Structures are given as structure tokens and as C-alpha cells.
Length: 279
Image (cartoon, rainbow, N blue to C red; front, side, top):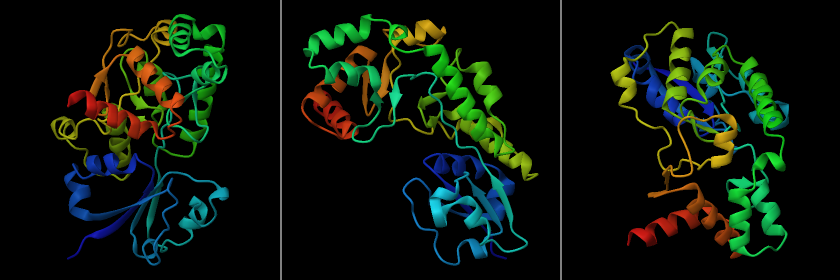
């Protein structure tokens, strides 16, 4: 007898989630799973949802048109199950992050200094030594990200925000603003399996999944870490940056150089620098 079809409509969190779900013998034996990537606006193939018995989706509003969650749910068979799953996003470690297009991992304070035409060495000194709290309301920004995440959590029965609130200062829970670490991905997968009344993977099986996003740990400003009392990082911490270990200051120097040279693709720039320095 063939397996049932599960469709996951999710962002980059979909693949590490499925890896963990498949560590459950119940889930792996029952479902053949297809991931459709939402943030790239990958079209939902005709007939895929219509044949699915389980639909796991991150909520998308009506502005997504045919990819909006309500539009997709209407395509399911009457006997199919659906479950809205977490879409975790957290700015607590990077309150100066900006989602403005044209550059990866934007930092609003760094961009202000670069746009002011200040020499590079002075930018590096000002950025590293001038406390971000002088320019941004860090506590207000933290509460804002918690409010935003509370709204995201409200649409799914899988609860995770309490875990973030309890542990975000004592251990690193995210590699970037939308790349949760293994701890949160494990929490999400187990919550989904509990909701489906399926067996959780063993701790050993989850440990084998490793870091869901191992290539890049976005460095954290040491003064932000000091302000929030982060126990796991400081100015000397080495971060994994596309194959190279580097401190926050080293990362910022690369950011400045990349912007100064008019390069928009910061990720490719970091990969190239790592390759050159290892050669």
C-alpha cells in the first residue's frame, strides 16, 4: 500500500522541519512529503493539494493571492487534514536589522554611517564603540519583535514563543532573524507530531539532525549582547560565516568593504572572502 501525500508550504524552515518529522517512525512510514517553497512564490502544482491527505502550512495572508493560505485550503479534499505551523522570526539579537532590499543582512546603523560618507576606519570605530542604545530604543525594539512574534504564533496551535522568552538570553536560539537553531526546530517538529498524535523522535534521533542552518551564524554586536545580558557571546566570540570563523569586528569590516565596493550580494562576497582566506 502506497504512502499518503503530505504537502508542506513553508519558507527555508521547511526542509529542516521535514528532516525532523521523518525521524518519527509514524510520520516517515505514513507520508511521502513534498515541500513547496512559499517565499520564492513557487507555484502550487495543479493536483498536488487535491491529492494530499495532510497539509502543513505557514500562514500567508490574502495579499499572497493564489498562494494565500485560505486559497490553498480550499483546494484540499474534504477528508484531508491541515495544520498551520510556526514561522519563527526574531530580531532580539539583531535589533538594528533591516529588511530593506538590495543588500543581505542589512544593519540600519552601519548604513547610516556609510551613507554619511565617513572614512571606513572611523565607521568601524564609531560602530563598535558607540553604544547602539544612543541611537535606537533597544528595549522598545525588543518588545516590538515579541509583539510581532505573538501575532505569528496566534495563528498556529504549536506554541514556541514562551520558550524563546525563557531562554533567548542564556543560549543562542537563532542563527539569523529567520533561521531558528536546532532547539527551536526540534520544538516545532515535536509540537506538530503531538498535534497529529504521532510518536516523537528520540532525543538521539533529533541530535543527529544537527544545526538546521550551519553555514552562517549572524554575528551579534557585543554592546547589544551586553545590553540584553546575553550569556553566550562577547567581542571575542567566533562565528561561523560561510566556512570561516570570524569575530563581530571582522564581520563588520567585511560589511563596510562590500558596501564601499558597490557589491549588493553580501552572501557571495562573504563566501568568496572565506574561500580566499582559506586558500
